[in-house]
Amino acid sequence: MPTIGEIINFLETKAPLSLQESYDNAGLVCGDRNAPCSGALTSLDLTIEIMNEAIEKKFNLIIVHHPPIFKPLKKLDGNNTTTAMLIKAIQHGIAVYAIHTNLDNVIWGVNGEISERIGLQNVKVLSPLQHTHQKLVVYVPKEHEEKLKSALFDAGGGSIGNYSECSFNSEGIGTFKPLEGANPFIGSLGKRENTAEIKIELIFPIHLKFQILSAMHASHPYETVAYDIMPLANEFNEIGAGAYGDLPYPMEANDFLRFLKDTFHTGVIRHNNGPKRKIKRIAICGGSGKSLINNALQINADSYVTADLGYHDFFIPADNMLLADIGHFESEQYTSDLLARMLNKKFPTFAVLKSARKTNPVNYFL
Image (cartoon, rainbow, N blue to C red; front, side, top):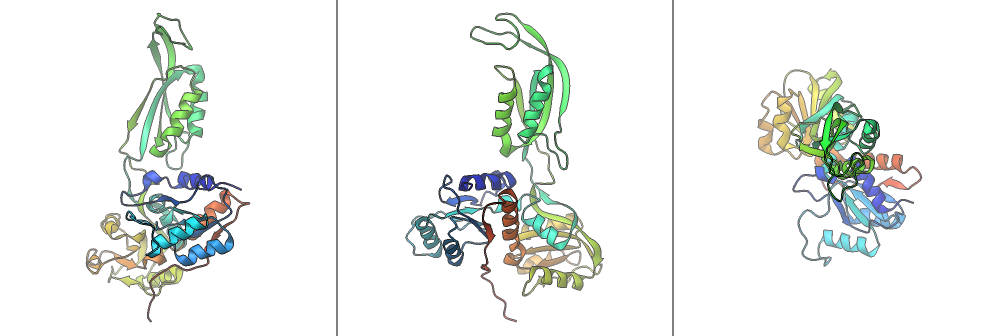
């Protein structure tokens, strides 16, 4: 039986907390990381019904997409829904974990799930984030090159897109003079040493910095390691908001809207007039995506699928792009499936279930 912390650590390797937006409150909302986990329930939102379902199943972990706390709480008095749920969670020893915009900002997360449901091909991030990676430059004796590189690769360094173990290596002569109190691996006290060394350069995600440096120090022969860490402004196609890709074949606008309605089981789709051409390139953003309308236009999307659009937002594309608002819950509903699938694959002998309760607060009068 894994601990709650072990499950959280796995989720944060997939969607690091460092990728959440500044306004967000992802992470462990309440609960004990060290407690053995009796079972995990996944849901888009936390409601009293979801809490009762966890209690009935005797599960002590609820994993939600939307954090139940967005603004600071001054009291836990049970006088509103949020505090009442948190009190109940604490009383029953249930941990609540939110995985929100950090899951939005990885291509295999919320938008990756939507892309798969629509059947998009050649999927890329719509609005890539910058400053998500750093470069490590480290110097090592030539005979220790492979040992050090293997350790750095195992720690998560050197991955670029669909390639792993990426590095650049160059030879040179390193100089150093051990001083009093040193315990040199090579050379003698008070004497300058000239040693053939390899300079290894590789990139790594910022959230893996501790693991990368720990692996470097553990596998390096020198008492004092010479290394540099450099910030990068590169954009990486795996990290950022939204996504876009192409349908396997073009569709008429009405056929595409009907396809969306059936796929996401939405009561209604709000849309603009859109272009006269057929629909093939699709941009998407689960949840509130009005801020990415212009990004979708820039990549020449035929349609942008999102939620929470305002009246004036529908004017922005004119007749250049079909805007389709399928509803907030509807666009993110499969996040629960995604989380349950990920956890069941990682912990195959452990109980992880998608909640049977529908949490959508919006109803449609037809």
